[in-house]
Length: 150
Image 1 (cartoon, rainbow, N blue to C red):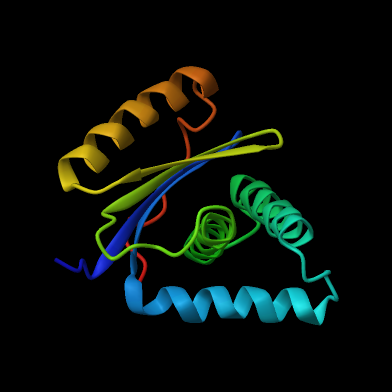
Image 2 (tube, one colour):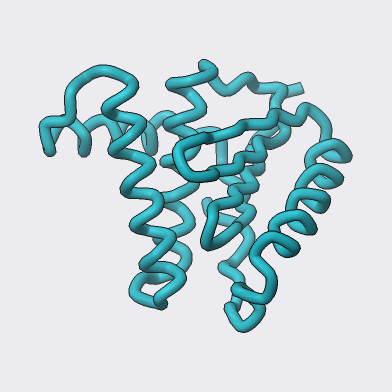
């Protein structure tokens, strides 16, 4: 069964978020990233493009944490950045995937793919608990972004 949306849970050193993206918007969003990279003349190899995309995602997360950017815009752009890296490193996003959980630590990105709603929800809950323990109360006073982006 093809799922209409895909869930993403992203855990970065300074923030975490969970969103749902319409599958129909993914290809266009990833094409926009490639066009933006072409415009700033990033080499057409995966390593350089991934590095640029992740530097931008980290800058967006810093702007979000400092309330310098609209949370919906920042979260949307970061979500597409992680999907861009996923596609470059792992491949196309299978229609049966319910969600992707990603951790960014220093220079390493880990992806975990979930096929079922239960697996995704359970693993996101565990990851949130772990992330909260690691970050402590850093995010305690922040208002989380809206959970769904279409």
